[in-house]
Length: 458
Image 1 (cartoon, one colour):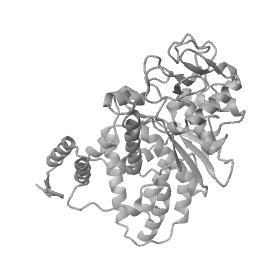
Image 2 (tube, one colour):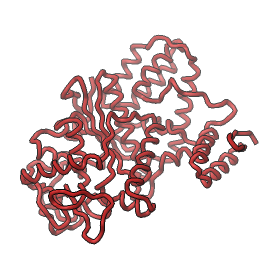
Image 3 (cartoon, one colour):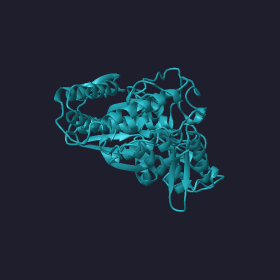
């Protein structure tokens, strides 16, 4: 039933799993050195929605999300500091403490957006042996060579290197994609194992046949994917920015070892953009989920916002656009709550149109339009409710557990109040005071006692 756009072929293809009993699905996870921004989170929303479609279609899905807690350097060119170790220095913490803290934040954000946890979380530091074994196999097959700073994959040894990104390698100059490294044989060669600096000891380093060091960024996904899901998997998902380097290199090192196709369907989401520039920490234009909450935006309004655009389209972020999404989300959940609590029968015709849309390359904007049709239809309220609950198995709005906000407290105030309770629980008094002021600006007071807190109208 499902048709999905495959970045490898640049075509929408009918989905045919390797094994009908279980779909293997790998989602590129975060590098846990800082708060993830909402542009990062769009990728996990897309994976969650695709997984829900697959499960609705009757497939069992085995999904892996990796946690990059070592090896991702401050640029993607095998150069610079390790992002985790750099944050550890800045925050006066250990690398493990930094990775654990931001992993916790990431998982908390997924929960707030009602994104399902994967079947398996895979931390890079827990699969070092597998990564070393993969590099050994590449070395035996003649795909790697040694330089003063590590072992590099020789991309000239693969006739089809760059096929995912459709790179034109002829005449490519050193520095066009990577920082100049005179020891590299080809501009596109990449590190599979890096040596620790001789003049300093890293917090995260391991013995290997080639010397003390740490894995390159790309090798972890190949090693963990093949260990947990098999040498060839059904779906690999991630942001469009991974196509030219990270995912291209995953394909190269995996297929060099196995001689088999690494992934059958590559699924990539487009950027969340701000003033035509992608949202990114490097651009200084990023917004976190906590920022949305502090401004009175329900995290589920962000889910609603993302569902309103196709995953392969750039999504333009602005506070005005998000406010519109908040209004739309509030209207939708209010209408759902007005349907009562009695369940009726799912309307087969409307449901089929909804399913046809989501199975057509996960066309959720069109599917969402059918949701509004349900609400405007002449169906009895109990049938509308049953139909929306069925659709929600894919949309993930968690309709069944929506609770009505107190009628006399505006939703924006309630969200700020809940954020303040969280800040007080974490003993973040400065943030708590800021949130109190914002609540007061909206015409409400917060009265605190030793054990409780409550909202009072001015």
